[in-house]
Length: 244
Length: 227
Image (cartoon, rainbow over all chains, first blue to last red):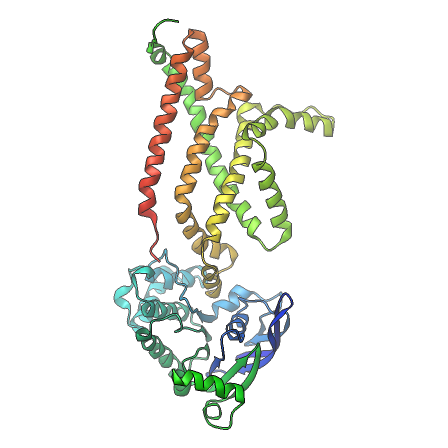
């Protein structure tokens, strides 16, 4: 059984269909990169995975728990799936340390000392131990995104979702974030990443999913995706991306 | 009428202080109750559940559409009559202080709910999303993430509303409650020195409200959250 199983998911905003019958899966330890032009529904799809966006048809199952089932304890499910946002979304009124401990304490019920130990280790890992007492507004975008990754990891997630984690960053800060993500992937973390970073996809992706107009139009292994032949839409998209 | 004689103010200071205590109590209870209920009303108005948002919206719009003084009047005189008409029983009189408190809390909660609603809406939607993503439930996301940021943005306007509330406490004269203004009026009538007493009342209100407004301005610059 896949860790994240997405089956025939459709979603509408009123009469407008944003997701049309999408089916894919992320196996344990896999890194799946989701790409596609803007407005193709990739961010919406990843937000459906942890129930931040509702969907009207289909089913998403995470380790046997159905996301769309009204009986599901969504907060509990979400606490086991880390999420990193395009705009970081650190809590600006809390220190970096508090950003990493609040979920552990209030959701997982860990004690203050245990939570701070864990947070300190993760800040070390993303190279920001010295910034623990600062506030998010005092950090650069790249540093904030690394803190956001550490915040998600602090909950000991079984899988990580990344929603365009580098697209709000200045170019010189993209790599420091990608390095952390590559490290995670190499350790065997199960990851679903919406990103345009084809270098990242080439390096660590197990599979690449290409979306267009709310539909998954390609879902294949990395080698098949970057090799030939390939669908016409994906070819066009890739040629635009790779020229930049 | 002869020269102004402010010695009457000194002679009546104990009575005036009793009145001021009533005003301050009313102010404090109305402020606390108004902010607490106002927060719940704001959350209800922003709820996607219509059973919560529709009644909350109706309540806020109703209260904000009637003059404050009507609400005070209503709760003191008309609610007991209405209860009697509807149930046929004579209700226990609750007294002017309690009925004024009820009226103040209801009116202030309606005003504060609008301030708080705007404050909550000023927080980017990614913030509650991030709170939910780490596994927080609705109350945790609101309590730890959204409301602390919203209140920080709202402090200046909430304090401004508090200054207005303090001035509005004087409206309880319609139910013959002896607040600061009421006590001064009574003392002024007894001594025949109404002008001096009301001048003193005006001065005290001015000093309190003016210094509070000044404090609000000072606070405003210090509270901005770096983003």
